[in-house]
Length: 172
Image 1 (cartoon, rainbow, N blue to C red):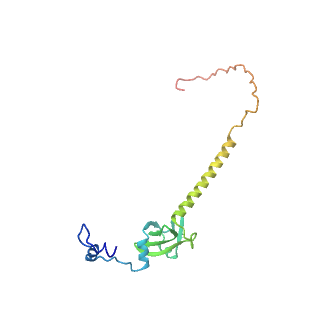
Image 2: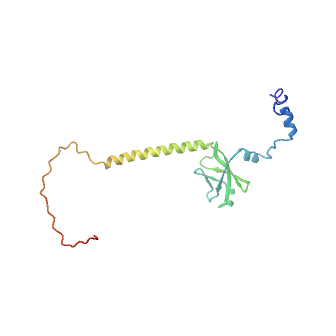
Image 3: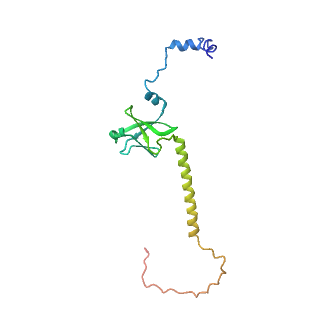
């Protein structure tokens, strides 16, 4: 690749790829710190608001002492979907802190794992509800009378109702 392709003239441009790359003067800029590298790699960004008990995201609560000064402020969080134990918090494009979820601290839990666990729990609850509905339906169902022999009903003489003495009008 290095000795043949990059040194041989390209069919469209007529210039070897190595010479064309070198002539443009483009050099990729490396990040100055690890924080800037994290910012480049963590592409998932979400706006959130800081509450008194931290930042709520994906039904989890993330806390850090630095967030106490930003209660009520809008911030941007960046996170790695493969590791939801920690998020990075930015206020006005400036890094604030790394907020940690106490429930996931010390573990590596991905967003897919959280979604999978939620779906499993949802299915379990739906099965419980269906089981309880069928139990209620059984309790409320009319009793079966097939085991009893039908008894003939006594014949009743027609009963005549007394005529009402109240006058009725056409509007009634």
